[in-house]
Length: 605
Image (tube, rainbow, N blue to C red; front, top):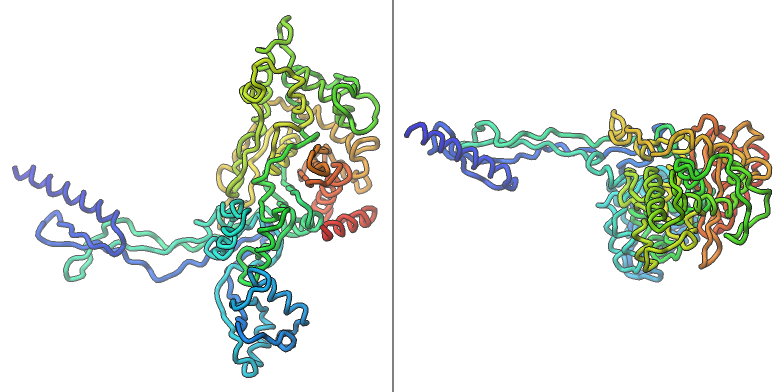
């Protein structure tokens, strides 16, 4: 009986201790000790006083991009009207700058009676303090805030949610706000727990006299916020943003050997501090209503038809399925599908890629869908369904039609059609290749994100494998998240990727679709593929994927410019200049005028 009673008391103690562990920090729970059930204990949760400092965000060369630092704000009087000329003299600004800064700070044009706060530099703060007696109605406010040392990489860096509440309120009042209320806060959001750190907590068990008798739960150690070391090269990022400027689209550059993202541009480009800066409410209002949706994180969240760059994937799959060989030739039969430029016949896969012949790849895909391997049977409904399913299986191994797992929130998966999809949309299982041939030129139902496009180029550069693209190469003193160090393989044999390289090199040589973008003059052989995506609602979209050097790839780039026109004249130049900038550190004199024209156009849009 005594043994049973002791076991009952011990079990009750364990149960009550568990309930105390789940209680709120201020809740007191009476716990009987094992030796004397009459003594009452109270579970406490003690918060240690030390506050963790939020970690910094640095680029791949350890340049600080984001840090928590003191910020000075000048609070202007609401009434009566301010003498902007005198204020400009105080701050060292001209009157135009004063009016512009105030206009940018107001959430809506012409807003009156609202407090306006302007960010000041250290030098401007000193001027205000020196003449503070003459400006009694001006108020200097100091606060700790996430500060950006560069305007670059806004969509990759993101923002701290606690500092973006004003932005969220503005977004709720707009029709397009639903795209931004998803809180796509970049690496700031994705790694928030590691950046934030956590306070220390103790869990003492106290008697009525306040004496401690052990702990009711495990103590939590204080953890300082950890720094993030990005894969981005801020100089390359800034340069790539100049090339895109105000144009809609994206540019993603990564190291194919590691999956590290070197540049991540979403256009139109915005300043990294825009979302959280207290004096940018007016700018945010304009961006929220802008028809080009500059706040949308295009490389991760927007999937588009890839166009002719997808011919690389179709060719690799056709080789794997033995539908073609590298020596296979096809006529440029315009009755099948139009070809936008005249060129010699595509007598081999290399020439088909060099000229980006639409009829050639129409027939490549036709051979793939209609073929019945190891059989004398003719094209049948069952064979078409089986071959399309097999095609999709191979293509999905590129990381398409699924998220790649990049360290950003809200990544889109893209889309690849299935046989069941066509059965439903066509209203019959008896659809033919002719009704789905747009897949052969990367249009129709295929949709890829910018990250997937760049990763596709990296896979070809690596002859069939990849590491998932990522933006953080190190957390604190450690490396990236473990999943970014696991190599992924496609279902395509490496020999079939090798068969694509001569054609991609030929694209950049004389007679190829992007011969004007060759870097042969500086000794760099580029392997690339252009794409022009038909658009029924305006100008065509321009696309390009490629890598360099072709024989030892160190950078892979994907560029997509909405309504940009031809991939050869719009997208390819941006991609190769980013390659040259990364590999050489500068642009050759031969391309300086070209570079100036692109940057000038980007600023105008």
